[in-house]
Each structure stands twice: as structure tokens, then as C-alpha cells.
Amino acid sequence: MPWSAYVRLLAVKRPEARDFYETEALRSGWSVRQLDRQIGSQFYERIALSQNKTAMLQKTETAEPGDTITPEEAIKDPFVLEFLDLKDEYSESDLEEALTQHLTDFLLELGDDFAFVGRQRRLRIDDSWFRIDLVFFHRRLRCLLLADLKIGKFSYADAGQMHLYLNYAREHWMKPGENPPVGLILCAEKGAAEARYALDNLPNKILASEYQTILPDEKIIAEELDRSRRELEQRRLSAG
Image (spheres, rainbow, N blue to C red):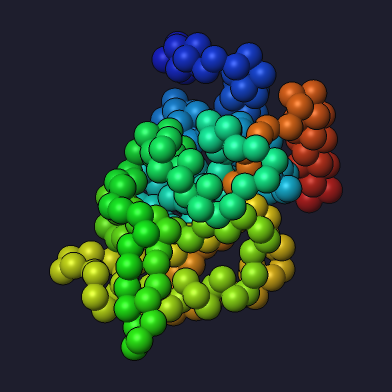
């Protein structure tokens, strides 16, 4: 491993995360740039919360193009929102207020390319008023990102609501030279099948991501990662 990679690893404060990045960099043959990308995107924290760790580990074995990016790559799933310090029970307005009060931390979690545009953006359709919780602009995607916050489980109805917002934003808010807006439904839980059937093949790009306000125990993370690595190795042996 190049010396510059070890220097980058030293910047990772949590020993468990540092060990994880070093192991995966060697296992998957990451370049220094890939290692930096994974650390910057808090890959360790996200995989700790993911329900499909094996798939996430497998995905990192493929090199990513340097400049091209898709909405799926730009938007994390899940999000790690430990900095919010929310109690056991809270409302969607509490979540929005906490996110805007900790906007700097939230932008760091989103990634370097996101710029904050506004909150509670109002729009009127016929005689009805609607509000979009948070609006961002993504520099590399060159498009608006509309975020809708849900404290409960994702529902197909959420997709229909976001589809309405995106159609309006495309017609009234999109500027010349920009790409069509993207929707993000940030929810506490999502069913993989319902999200796939509700979001696939829509004319507008809508993504659903889970968020977590706490990380699981480090011992549990290590055990699940070890099991996922063994599963990947078994798949390779079976394929060979």
C-alpha cells in the first residue's frame, strides 16, 4: 500500500473504522483515490447500518469512473445522522429543524458537491399549496435535489407526492443548462421490494434512503462484516 494511503488512514479517528478501511483497501485493491472516496463518504458508517453488507462490499471491488456520476452514486443509503441528538420520539418537523440547525454537519454527511438552497420551499398547484422540506443543488449532477423527510416507513404514496414536486420543479425552477431535478425521500425505514416497485422506471429520478441516528455496537459491526467477507469469498470459490 502506498505511503500516501497510510497517511490518509491516520486521519480516520475511530480505530475500528481505520482497520476496516485498511483491510478493504488491501482486499479490493483500492487506489489511494478510491480509499479517499470511501473514507470521505463515511463508507464504514453506512455499511454498518446497511441491511446488505455483502452487496456493498462487492460493489467497492469495481473501480468507479473519475468524473462521471449517477444520482445513485451521489446519494448515500443509509445516512448517518448521529449529530442530531434526537430523542426516542420526534416528529418530521423536529427532524427538519434538527437538520437545519446542524446544516454544516448535514452537508458534510451529504457530500462535498451539495449546496443548500432552502427549506420549506412553497409551490402552488391549482388551489392547493405544498411545501418541500429541503432543497439542494448538486454541482456535479448539475441539478436541483428535492428532499422529503419521513419519520416512518417509506410508502408508495411518498413516491407519488415526490413525482408531483419534481414535475413542478422541472417546469418552474429548472434553469437553462441544468439537468432535470432529482428527488430524495429520506425515511426511517424502507422495504426493498416496495421501494423498487414504486421507484423503478419513473420518468423522474426518485431515490429513497434510510437514515439512522445511532450506530450499532462495534462488536456487532465487526462480526457482520466478517460474515459478509466470508460470504463473498464463498461466492468466488463457487463461481470458480
